[in-house]
Length: 637
Image (cartoon, rainbow, N blue to C red; front, side, top):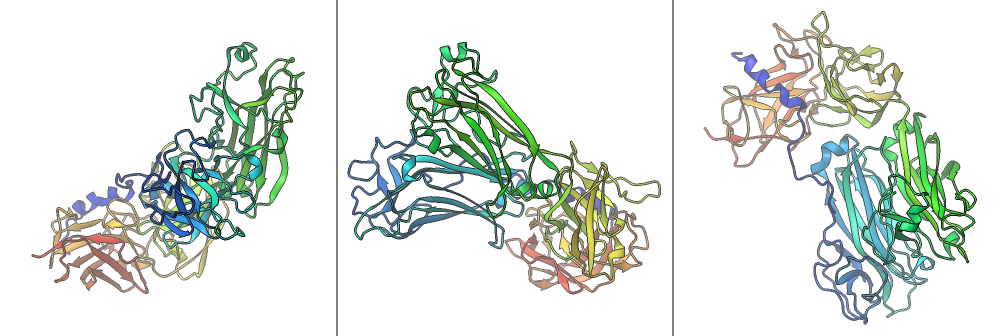
């Protein structure tokens, strides 16, 4: 080989860079036509609108106008910022639903790191006795397997007569690539020819980059949304409750009593209704993302709220936290704070802070926060403000589900000796990324940032560590085993053990930006990066960076910086470019790179040139890198 190895190594920093700047799906409503304003709305109860832009409809699902001839009028209680139309159950009973699918792949980096929270909400109204509307978000992976589901329903007909806010929130699970939204307005058993008066408006799905630990998980806990309410009764966004629950501005007299939060906003929640004890206000928070740490017993919570009432109300609002498992079964005892009684308040109108702390029960997958109001007959209204619920990690470290992946392809599956892998973790608390270092013997160290990774009893060389992932190299001594037990240690605390299958090879090709797919980390001859503006010519030589080739000759040495004579991959290696077999010149270690990082030097086959990027696939032994995920650019000579 006549190679300039120093120039080849210039490309290595690309292995650990972040994703390219795509149009990210954060902090905006991802739904298309979320308020039924795109397109026409029916003006008569016998009409049907069959074309609802952005939605695939089923059955009688339709769009109606807010006019007196339709079930919902302009004066119907509901969102103040509504348009002219709303989603309508339709001119007849039976099935009535619509769906749309949203691609989340542009946010894959943050999603897979476990840093994305979702907010699902909408204004819903039920048809008396016939059906309760449902708004559901199903989060799927790239193979359309459901990873998580969040659903809100109602309201029941006893909770109000208008469009009421219904919402849920939680955290998007790693590997999520799309979400399917279902709006179901079906009404079964309705007499033939009877319009289905169920409806919905102002639907939202918003994603935000937020942590699951250390932040207040209560949505709109300070009741500042929507703002500037004036004297109009308005439900708080993010909460599910009776139509009578409403936001109220702090008055000068109320503030004068001094029984308000020091960091209060402009508004607080009140419930001036005789039905208050029958209709609590609540919200559900999905915490499945944190299950590894929760199930390890390493998560505690802090729960607080400002609770009270007007002066002549003998009782006051209470707040409750409940913990539910994956089957929606209640776990442990409900945690209740409050009420703040009239005696506590000195017979004044106002609120006092109440709080509690505790441990989150193992197996918890969702948490429901509820405000419970006493009956207000003949007394002043109960009130609440500044509701907070925070999860805190007690230091437990865990490997996430399907969290051991090929560092190049991102694939979860059997691992091979010497393969570079990414281990996704929770419970590691580092302010920044700590990168590879060499020990006194000149080998890659096995401890970084007080983190270690074990494959059975062997410590793996570490390329980098941060708070969400570890870059490691599978020790070569796993060769010949059928399975290996993988665990992580942080500050002496051990994670659970994950059993991984072992294969002879598990090839993956690196990309320029470190993502699982896209332009490959490939250098042209003479050693420039292959890209759209710099395609390789047919019959020229290119060098492809990859990992997962398995054992080498001479045998691989963990953490070794490779020098001549260079170890070569033992397994038979072949490369296709654009579906055509390339002439392989070399497959083995990178000089002055670490053991486990490989290159394949090949000749670009004739007939592979295309105006579009062409796929690159490496096969080693009986395994191949994923097809149609890594590409390169080829031109004719």
